[in-house]
Length: 157
Image 1 (cartoon, rainbow, N blue to C red):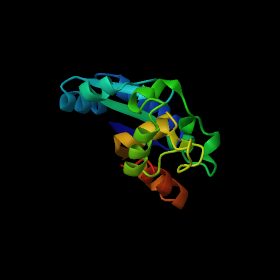
Image 2 (cartoon, rainbow, N blue to C red; image 1 turned 180 degrees about the vertical axis):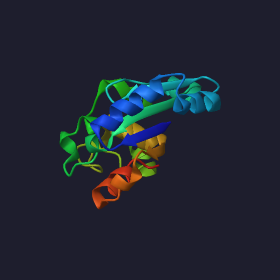
Image 3 (cartoon, rainbow, N blue to C red; image 1 turned 60 degrees about the horizontal axis):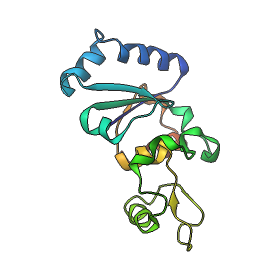
Image 4 (cartoon, helix red, strand yellow; image 1 turned 45 degrees about the vertical axis):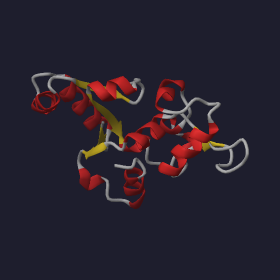
């Protein structure tokens, strides 16, 4: 899993086009290293555990979509049904607790240690955290703020 972080909309569009064009040098290097099994996705697209096992999945993400003070308002960190295959079933709270012990920065519903709390949100943000992606920071000089650094480190690279 590779998380390719860009700073602006313009660079996002340029990078997306480059990564999806098989003749572009970026894509050629990715395809060469993955044996031609590269999957380029955006945050609105879903991928599965099988995709992770069988392909090099590259998620293109704009830093601002994950870099705000209140992450509750960010779609990246909202519970969504598209990534539930990466997490224990909802009724297996002991398995949620085990995963929370391994990844303490996962967002969850309720109080983490309450009787009914600690159910992990099946968000894209949490999925990235448990996958511990390799991170590419495009124009890295724009990611030196404390908030940007905290955001990047919060993905457990």
